[in-house]
Image (cartoon, rainbow, N blue to C red):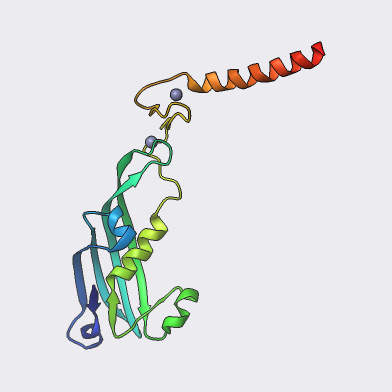
Length: 168
Ligand SMILES: [Zn+2]
Ligand SMILES: [Zn+2]
């Protein structure tokens, strides 16, 4: 979705208010099944426009420890300058985004912001106990004694080995 901002370059329009639900394609679209809301004001600056507001949505995350799905509320600030002085090929090296065709690509902007906001490893709760690697049960739901069992087993094996060596 593109927002034309050409009218900000004239004398008549001071600002453009954006209040828009954006539905994204692909992987991010799956993470935000309800889409995200963009609420912002776009105003004119020298050789470009400035967009200020926020992006908000509910992300369906998967906990890296227990693999359960959980909802994460996301709210990211939008403070983005777009300039016609920045060439699209220089976008990577510039704090200011290029303004192409006097329009803002909302999907692109939202994708970038959500990517930066995405946690490297999402956990449902800091106290999440995760999944038992032995019996596969969710330790948050039901406790098990598997871990101690493994440690004991290995130590028992080692002890047996040492015992045998001593005996030989
Ligand atoms: Zn978890
Ligand atoms: Zn277990």
